[in-house]
Image (tube, rainbow, N blue to C red):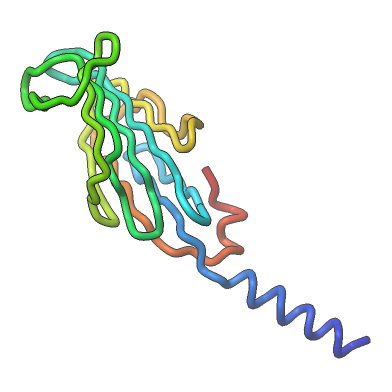
Length: 150
């Protein structure tokens, strides 16, 4: 009986330290950890600070890194893309599957009214402080994901 319990404890400890891919979103207002086994979808929606029109970027996140899969915007002012593939309602749309790496950054100001969703769930909404938003993928032990979740 004691031997079986000891084996069970060893298995639980080993499983709890297994690394799990985790999306980390760091803002001036806090940090969010989103563990995932295979893949996540991130949507970053904001108001462009010059044209004051909506922009929406959609990313796929895997253990390999970030992939931009869709961009939607309404204007061609101040650095917004001029090449698009189609029009959806009032939006110009470009779809792709471009690898971006394991980390990327945005700079936002309050007028951007940014909303960041992970798998459709709002994680960041209307930041009150201007600053850098850092997205990165790390490996985190399974037991830590219990305390740090989106």
